[in-house]
Length: 161
Length: 161
Image (cartoon, rainbow over all chains, first blue to last red; front, side, top):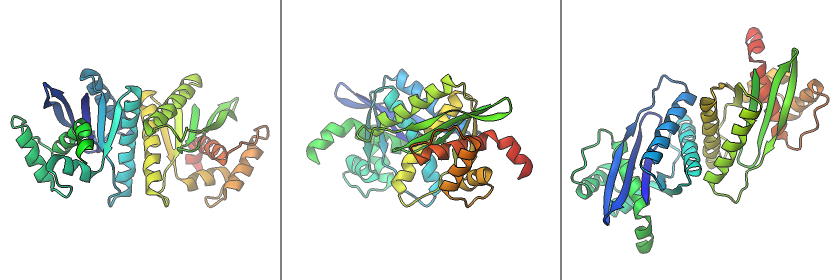
């Protein structure tokens, strides 16, 4: 099971690739993708698709993990987030990946034990779990790590919830 | 210029393929795609992608024409519509197609001359333009024909607007 966790966004998309190595949770790769704001929407969506298609092939991803979206203040952002999510569903289908969705509360609870945790608390727990992890430049990356772990822990999680 | 007009939806997606043959607007193909409600979202999105990829290759499509979306009563439907639109943007990018977007008012005005026209009026004008067109089973098809014509007429339209 090699899980790609993604926190999609047109400005910054955080991603994280995790698996178990000798029973130990391991971050194989993490980072973020920034789409060029000046390019047309279809070009940006093409870049997004190609970037994650490459990651899926390179790391032989088996599972994709994402958060369930919620409607924020901006309806247009919500719709555009849908574009990226549609592309992720397509990637899951084209590469025969298992797709996992978690609410933001589920992600926070899985990592910190508390669904109402702050982003900083989530980050803190992650740095305890992975002390060698370089401090990510964007909080979208820590979010993606948490989401990917949720996918990896899914089995375990379903035992005690 | 061979235009694929699409009115996307998870239940029914209307589509229409139009071009000019000897200066005359011609409908090469039209119909609808119905996605199986019982399949998971990623499978349905995969079917949607493959269906239109085939149409694009078969008819050597050069342009895609779609309507700008508006937030209706159901936020989840709006988000899911975004998934399909994201796939259309991707198809445009992967096949190097020109993408055209029109507001529902623009589509109605282009066809009937009046932006506030009813769906039935739009259909009436279309049957006057294409008397041999079999009556479509779904109004999503007539919508798609109108949207595809908007793409085809774009040049003309920009002259008198």
